[in-house]
Image 1: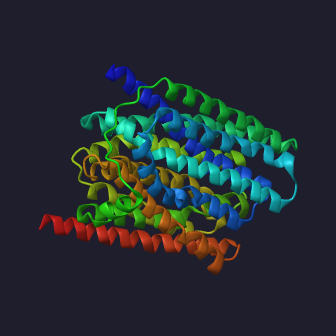
Image 2: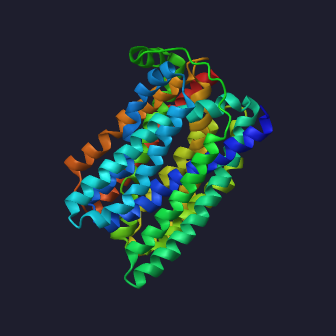
Length: 405
């Protein structure tokens, strides 16, 4: 096995994979769902669906510990994952009824989310097993930079294509072109994964009960669970209606929407190296505390400023979002894995995702019972996000001060 050669393959595949995830979930599919006519609540649920389905990861570790993380099984699951997202392109041709469109959308979106969660832990485990510990921060920084470059290019294409086609009354055809691009990226990624070396993963066989009990009883890992859960709730409640807020209530155009996504990608790309350097000593308070401050500022601005002011401030806000995203990605892709006990990494990572899923399930319930579809209701979610990040900041600061003593 040629380490440098396989390192490059894993880097390229990871870039294509994460870029496609970002394209499909954050911008493109959300805009397409709005075109289909889905309600605010449906769009909000979709925004957090991939995190809600994290709960099934608690079954992934026992499953893959029994089948040995078979490359054939994992790649079959991954292929279904990618095909389900592209299949959404057929929805407008199947029905014009909003209810039927919503059902079809969520069937495909749920398959996409579940197969994505099932495959997530295996690819992380393969990558972390192959890549040397000292190379992990550099790998994460390179991946984030390259990923965001791909997203940047796609976002610019997306904005121009959709605005041009919409201007001539052919918005649907603009989306079809973009679905084709997503399919091409996915196809290249699948071929590359087939040809990439799969390292021998040492994973102790574990059942569902142990997969929950062992990580939950680990006191050292508990801080990771609290941090991940609080962050997922705060970020989830703050962003679940953000795309709706921009496209439906601020009425921004596709090109401006794309530029905002480009700014997020650029911000993540340029700040990744900075956060990688901060991560080298594994002092995670230097990651989590600044991240909390960044998102408190972001959601405060979204709450306090009016529509006209926000139209000018959105670029700055999205730069901050990218900076905050890049910081947590370092924690998410390194700290969670390294905090796990040896040979039980799959169990620990999946259990952490399980906790994130449980926490996120509260969000649609909260939305359905409390919030009505309006601009002001969405701003209430921003306020809750601010309060949640303040709680996370206080928790992590107290934890840091306790460790110093």
